[in-house]
Length: 238
Image (tube, rainbow, N blue to C red):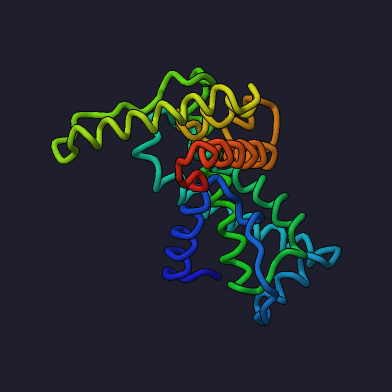
């Protein structure tokens, strides 16, 4: 079982994962020694009969508590939730986390306790569902309407403002002419208009992995174009 410290560590770690749109299943690491409690969980979940069913019920209870915790933690910022929505999302999150965990048992590396590892799946699923609910019914902008504006920062001199405007113009031109329409739409939606990648994947009926690859290829093209123009810029950031 998780103690209070485990809850805090799991919540903090999965919160970072959720913000980056990366699930616990996306994280790989070197195999480590698995503790006895975790080995017990794996054995029970891989068994059959009553022992297996009991493990499923116990695991689902853990995941449901985790999902409720995450939804409650984000409730203040989730104004779109109505009475009863939170509990419904918690059950959906626990169910989806259960499916993901059972399909990823062989990926468990023992770098944390099994319960902590499983807990993060539920936190992640809850975060995804809250983001999708927040964007439900909202228009997804796939053009470059929300380009950043260079403000009159008192700490920035005329030369710095001019340089920033020139760089932005070069970048905008490179995006317009060096990327495919699909690359341009995805990059602008995620990097400029701030659309969560899991929300965009759902709207475009694709996967997060496919969108990650699209963004990676688009940034590689931009780096090559900017380098050819003698401009050094970091396009690897999220």
